[in-house]
Image 1 (cartoon, rainbow, N blue to C red):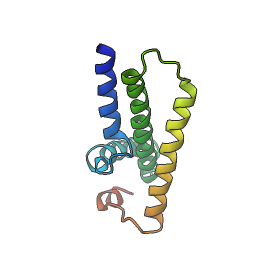
Image 2 (cartoon, helix red, strand yellow):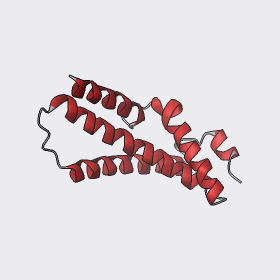
Image 3 (cartoon, rainbow, N blue to C red):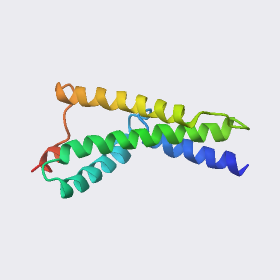
Image 4 (cartoon, rainbow, N blue to C red):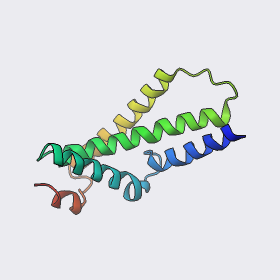
Length: 121
């Protein structure tokens, strides 16, 4: 029972961080990405925007991986999954999603939030 509760918690938290819930970016992913970009800016001035993109990507990767592990806990009694394969799937899907969003911003199909542009040096 505890394993299924842990799995449900991981699926729920992972869903909030994953690219599967489009509305979550405003409340979860962008603040995490912004904080990550700000930390990167302390170390490497002028790298705020790349740091923000990497933070956004990492939050999506974390969400996908958490959902995979949570679903495994909930649905599979004896997990025989390949950890490396699960991580690569999470990494690949999140990377593809982040590249699509970055491309949409680059080609001005999506507008960059003004607070991200104001924070650049």
